[in-house]
Image 1 (cartoon, rainbow, N blue to C red):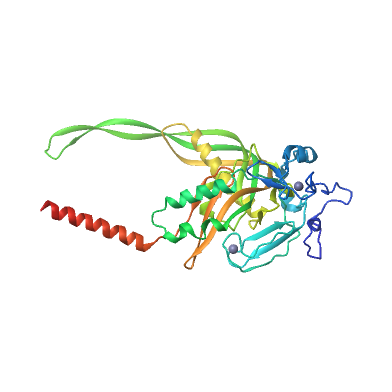
Image 2: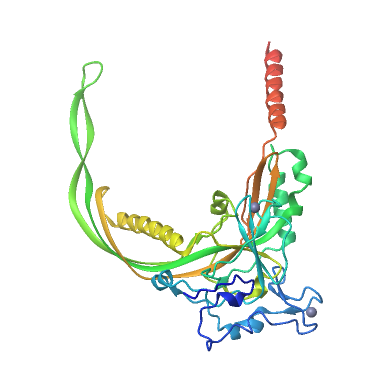
Length: 386
Ligand SMILES: [Zn+2]
Ligand SMILES: [Zn+2]
């Protein structure tokens, strides 16, 4: 691993490639053909767009040939032994860490923030990059545009009966932020051998006396146990493990999945310029451990499905994993982070599918009014019946 003694804001500092390796000089350096400004990704146009003159540059023409559509899987074991930073961010960047929620935000080409995009706290400090940071190889660009998500969040809020009224108008949609969250994706082949006892139900007829002393018959279920064994081969493709601390984990689960098979693009800074990127804090080793546990559980379940019979016990599985690879990728979310009273709440929307999940404060005044109203109706009905 290369050690760079000087912390640097430049993306090139993290490079461990040989000096004669192809540098990413061209990546992210495609200017607007009309005015020469930096291009940004437009979710509405599904295209690169110049923020100054509005010229659209279809992404496929601008970038795909140059990058060779290279969303490549990397060998996991090798990367865990020798962490490398890949091909860098391809642009100038700044990192800040929030002292409240700990999220680290990465800004490309100079834009910074006054407040944390995740929790709204003003307590943000410069974060010095670690040189072993793995940079994103791929990205799922935004598909849901800002007007679309504002509409959806307004509707979502409209359906919350017990939220304090002033939240609906104020703050909410002003603090809407488009963020790219760090994810790890893992592939692996597994060969598993299993053994178990398969149980088959059979029934016998028994006689008994009922409460009145009469002789009755009934069917009684028994289990005949037989040894069973089998093999399983399975391919895990793009299993996702989030690397975020900025978005509350329970909310994130409710807006997954992020489709990774069709629209994943090779990372280039055009996609993230003007957006905030979160730097991962679940590192590759931790994420690989989580992925291993999830695969073990999934393999056990797949083997259990193969056991014949009506029931089973003593399932033993021996699994061998091969060709484990990973990618570091960025997934789009829209986020409203706000504090109400002393608590912080988040509403998140999947930037690709539009799926929304949120947290909300409850207005005890409204709840109390509804309870009182129900009591009143009850009393009125009661008196009417008398
Ligand atoms: Zn332009
Ligand atoms: Zn924060």
